[in-house]
Length: 165
Image 1: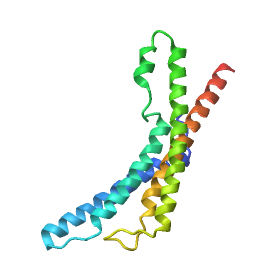
Image 2: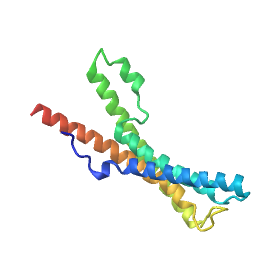
Image 3: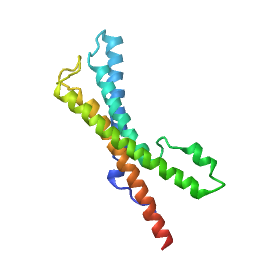
Image 4: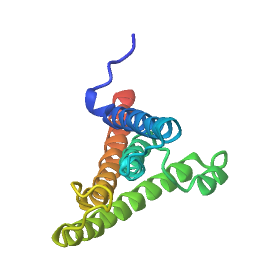
């Protein structure tokens, strides 16, 4: 029997599918209006770019959850058959460094987000949308990667504990 996946483990997938679907609708509508009615929405391309950034940032967290983020696989694979414990240690070191890097980037991007927010920057074709949410997506992505890597590692350790018991 398949184990039910909690809703919080599917958040990134839902966001990615939703945002990419919205992008397809916006750009398709824009193409149709441009070639059929000789009219285009001035905000369509910029909003699509904004949504794509958010979709990519959701994908970054998803990669952390599924262990598909950039790691040191070439080095680990060199030790795969010789010593599996060394391979596991290399992956642990890679995950620790990734979490530290993402935590640092989260901190730095938060500073950038606050600077942009204080300057009240807006998009040229969408003056109703401030620019800071674009940078805030990076903050959320880096925090999400940290949380997802830690969540994955804790889950793996709990699973190993159950196997040993």
